Amino acid sequence: MRRVEPVDVLGNIQALRAIAALMVVVVHAYAVESTYLPGRPWTTPFHILGTYGVDLFFVISGTVMFVSTATWFGDKSAPRRFLARRATRIYPPYWIVTALVLIVYLVAPAVTGEHRSARPDVLASFLAVPQRGEPLLVVGWTLSYELTFYAVFALALRFHRRYLPILTAIWLLAVVLIGALAPHANPWVRVLGSWFNFEFAFGLAIGAAVLSGRLVAPRALFALGVLLVLAVCVATAYSGREFLDVAWWRPWAVGLPMALVVYASLGLERHGVLAPPWLRVQGDASYALYLWHVLVIGAIGFALNRVHVHGTPARIAIVLGGYALAIIVSLLAYAYVERPLLRLARRYFESAPSSTGRKAAAQTS
Image (cartoon, rainbow, N blue to C red; front, side):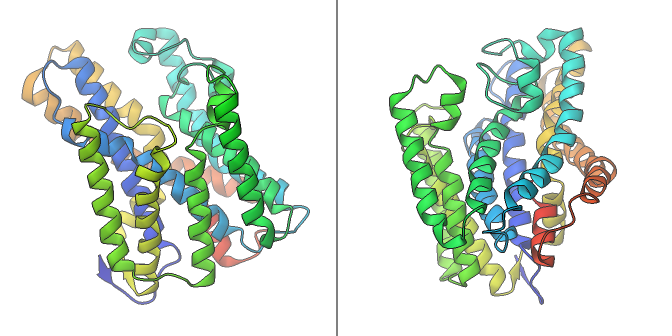
């Protein structure tokens, strides 16, 4: 990271969003390699780390939602305005990619559904609500957790900000009780009672620290967070798992180290240490990368299989070519699809109370 003046608004958060999306790409590059090519995938050493990009996303989401709406608390119109802005930010790009996946699924189901645990529910997939198996666009499962958090946070916006810790504690208690007492076979229970929800709460705590200016020892905490993330990846690998299950220990083993990284990154930014511009630019397009990379890398793997290209050339095309093409597509999709759609939607939702809030909310999914 380089030292700059002045510090951008949540610039390092944008960089972390890029890193989180790039981590998730590894997971699906690994899946495509495993599906179409024999032998050990090149992405095997990074697959575990990639699965934890989701945890980083959830912590970031909690942080940015709090910081970008800090002055909205207690406003009667805040819940409606917040949910409208989130819906216009999340759904239009997601619907476009999901519609493309639906077309492929209808024409050649095996291409998108060979390893699915259940037949996808089309309506639930487009709404990004919980379903028994994976949605049409497999990464859409994370949006079910995001939307749950948005609903809870929208309710909290109705009250004064001083009540947020109490409301958060009540929410987390409900999460624990639902997870402990209700049947996990129900997809709604799986989301509402998931320990993933604690990671959004970690993000809220970081947001409170940002607003209060309590950002201490950023360099030491950044190093500690990174070391802990690497340690949990090594521990996961030695346990023989592909990732830690979403149980009570995951938010503490994975989410808390990710929270340290987010907290320390904001502290570094407060001290003038900012991530490189190219990484922040990719952060702006991180949602596009998150949505489009599965189609891009999957299409490469399918095409190579059809023309019978295997071995090292195929791995280079899937891993290196897939990464490069996914990044290019994400930047184009952000510039020519996502941003125009967002500008169109924002014509009807221009009531954010501050320039800082507008910028953070506009950049963050």
